[in-house]
Length: 305
Image (cartoon, rainbow, N blue to C red):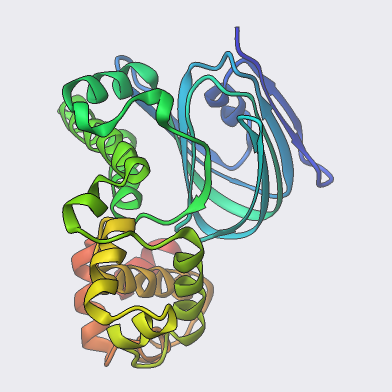
């Protein structure tokens, strides 16, 4: 039987002991756990500060974590290796099944956590021989792949809503998540595009640039020049690494900042638009409404209801 342990390092935070991750997360105060029968991916959303956690190799599920509204440093010891990473909003962390894992996190984060049955990964690999095998998946801390990020958010929304038909939607999204995980690791997108994907270091450099210069009107050439790549090759390499175009990625980062500013400030919408790089309030409202489903004003009002 597998055993997971979360030990909080801040005062007044409980020591959590459980036999698996979903049980451990269910003991956190700030969490919403979604467990549904006959689902190959179960979800939890929770907020946590500095903590340590451990899970042994007997835990048979893969783990995919999307961090939102996050800032901190993570050290992972898994599969015999050590990985130090900066956790930022939008970053993903993946752990394949069957490996010993230890985490040491310093900071604060809200995570959407997926527990993925190995049977799902096996089934997708068997039906798509070119994707590789589950044994080829490796631990990866704090990487960015917007296509996978959107699928995590979509799956959690479906599971949390629990409306009629959730099982059909959940299965469809679960298959896409598994496929995207294999694609992220074996580089098939890069092979199809004929371009070497950006490295994680290059992606980190781009994200730091975008976050620092978001309010300015930079373009594709500026982003490519930062990495000493030509604009055309950069666009293909970027999509090979992330599953999305640079423009789509940039819009997502801007919308993520908009959501943070709506939640944390009373700034007028026009001011938020200019601070996040949109040409005007109308442009921001249109992009936000299309991506989120409600306009910014309604989103802010719902947060404070």
